Amino acid sequence: MPRVYVVREQTLKDMETRILVGDGVELYRAPGVFDFAAEQLLAFPHEPRTEPPKFFVEDSRRGRASTDFEQALQIYEWIGPLSETEARDKRLWAWMAHVPFADYTRERWPIPADTKEARNSILKHWFVRGEGRSSLRRHSVARLWWAIHLTRAPWEQDESMRVLVNVNDPYVYARVLLGNQEVFFHTLEREFGSDRRILIALLEVLRRSARPQTPLVKWLAREVNLACQYRELHLLPVEELIAFIESLATLERESSART
Amino acid sequence: MARRSRPTSFPHPVVGIGDDIAGQLLCNAPDFDFGADTTVVLVDGLVVTNQTIAGLVRDQKAAFTVRVGCGATYYRETFRTHEARLRLTLPSATLVGDVEVQVRVCALQRIEQYGPVQLHPDYGDRTFDVQAGDVLALGADYALRVEKQFDPLAADIPSIMRLQKGKHLSGPFEVNFGGEQIILILSAEDYENYGIASRNEPELVHAALVMPVLCEAIRIIRRRADEDEMMTGLNWFRRLAAMMDARRIDENDEVLTAAQKLLDMPLSRAFKSVARKSEEA
Image (cartoon, one colour):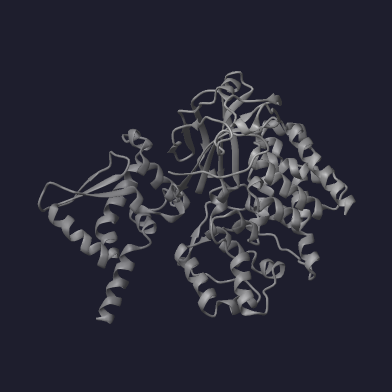
């Protein structure tokens, strides 16, 4: 039975220090997993039933992102549901990136040749640093687990979203979220992205729209963020919320037609 | 709890923004009661002093709203009430790091020709159409730092034990397992020396003081089905049981072995520490 571990706090600090001031960067360029001594790890109280999935990552930038959804699904199914506190644990995600998904992390987020850039890239994608939303959004594995966690069958989490039930596809919104890097960035980076009701309503509008997703999500994220300052969108019934965001999408279409 | 306000511009006059409308939205600082599984948040003393808005709340056309947000766990939810008091029960797992609480009054339906009393004279007789969800009054924003309540993986034994100075000048230490934490009562003499020892030789303190107490605590956990049923609700009992589960320590492990695993082999650490210091000397 495969085991899941977390990297001890002190080891984590040592690893980060080695990247910042030592020769750590070079270790990340070599293929393969990182070795940890038993005393550097703690067993995580979740036991996956299978071996971790192996991923093939395409070379091109677009190609690397094109399989995010399928990989997210496999990672979520392998790790399983966790409590939010567990899924916030930087020690867990460090182990994930350095052991079962080390090659994946290296291929999905290639390490730049420049040492300073390499250092930043490693700290962003192999470690969860800080407590803000962006720290999880950047981590190679955490971002995929959280994308599924935040969007999976929302009608099961919130009675008010039963109007959106899609019995055939509990991952309908994960597909939208991970289908375009800009959607992922502009929703989860902003504060409203933490409100599941608003996030799902926005993803539903994107799902229904035939407009190019990148300019639309940039527009909607900005406008929804602004509306949240003077309006408690969470209080609206989901259908009204969707209608409101659709009215914002109409403005984007009109604005785009004028330019 | 820090209290802070956020200046924001609104498309309609709002209580709490400059001198748009006379009045205030008041409440007491939220009270958090953290439990292992759920956290109770109590916001009381909710009152809005502008008569028009107070009337809308009374008529259930508007409500006091409390938005709880935690960026670290992607959690944000807004709750509402028409009463002066709101009691929320939230999953503790969603609250870690910086937690924000924002208190508002918001419209629950479209209100046409909204013209609150005591509007700033510059507005004259002007009225506004307000949408469902629009903020009518702005209260304080509160920020709270929530440390992770309990991490069973860290096997944080000090979190379940507390040292106390006893009334006896010298002699053996005593232990009280009856409270939320295990209390180790040292003689006055040992208590004085403990500070020096724990700074210089923490491994020895683990081996000589914490280890035997932990052995006894594990024995108590294993007897819980019998005479110690009252203890199962105690904080130290639940935490220690969770630490043992997390480390996969079960009935097959001898008590001594279990305690050594939880303390990361204190005797070996103590020997290594002494050897290292001898070499350095």
